[in-house]
Length: 316
Image (cartoon, rainbow, N blue to C red; front, side, top):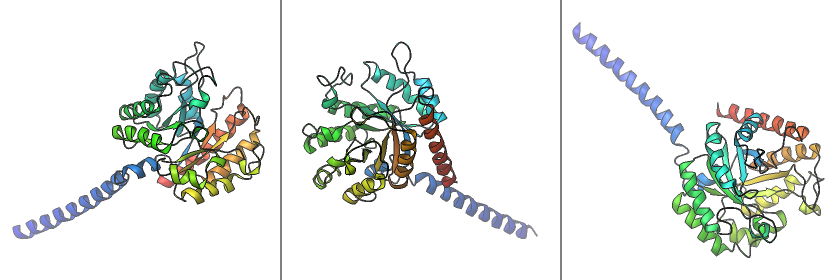
């Protein structure tokens, strides 16, 4: 009788062990799937599924960024990403660092964006402070900061393709090598315009970049902010050159362009929907004020809300 009891106990222990090993195996598989990505694939992965706003953060009366209001509005519109522009004030770099932990608490990914020489003095009033035109220093400082604040997943240079005489492939490689020695997982996704994304550009630059931020202006149709119908055509053309899996984040103008004028709420909605269907992510330029631009704010909130719900459902 005692031997039978021991035998039953042994069988039960074995069964429990098998079950626990199976559960642990599933959990480990799930938790390490992302960790198995190499650094290059990780940088691409953090860009996919992006939907958020870009630049034009709300400010306090003293000129500082209202980081708490910005986070509250990003949560309200269900954004999962914000690209923080460091070129509107000498305090931007400090405010950026105040913003990062608040974004982290809400699971919001952050990009840091600086301006190129063509948007710095003498062409404008301000440099991106404090490192100005020292882009290798920017690359390293973003990387250092991203180690302290994991919400910082990428950095960008505005109007990158307007400044290729400065950002030669050799210079860019030097910048990115310096950054990746500090944090090889920090992505670099500069602003690249349609007409500049030529076969030669893709050959020279695509292997260095982790993706392209693509501001849509219907350049295949003569440049305008009226026609959203060429979104898929232009994104697919870029994908044909760079590869179907190459991250392209679509960027729609919600705020007026200096040369092409303003957009309508209907245009923004149609362009966002088209961009979501063919690109790897969608950014809205700029972050919309819910009081000054209630229609566009509501459209962004509605679409981001739908996309966020779909993402959560897909993960279940």
